Amino acid sequence: MRVRDWALARLAEQDLLQVFDGAPDDAAPSIGWSPRPDGKGQRDVFHDGDGRAHQYACLYAAPGTRSREDERQNGLGGTTDNVFQVTAAGGDQRRCGLAVEKVLDALHGQRLPGGGICRADAFAPTPRIDRDPSPSRAYVPLIFRVTSGDA
Image 1 (cartoon, rainbow, N blue to C red):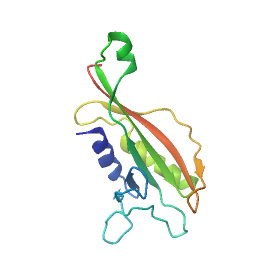
Image 2: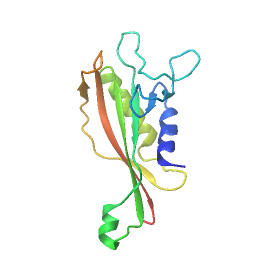
Image 3: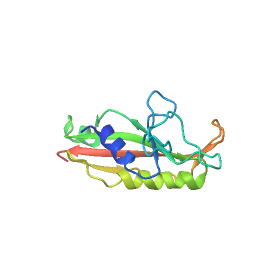
């Protein structure tokens, strides 16, 4: 199972978290929780009754890369690090905080079926504010690393 697929599946299991593979409004609709009566995803972020964005997560996956430590020690490397970002967001700091908790619960410290463990890098806990969408949104970018191999 690819790391991207594993991460999307884990995130989609979280209750009340809208999940996007990439940025909202891209070609693919959200997965996992849906506010729609038919349960289908939507291409944009759901807005709660107060007009603010519901808590959501956007996965940005990257291909696996060789660990720099392994490169330095033996030239070729024995492990593959998969690094990806999940941006946790919501219409205010509270909803953003809920999204961060759900993302960390889904991914941090979890073992992948094929081996390796997923860990979150240290991050600034204060949400940033994106004023471009209306209404504005609070977000926290979270970087995850999955290391597998003979390390």
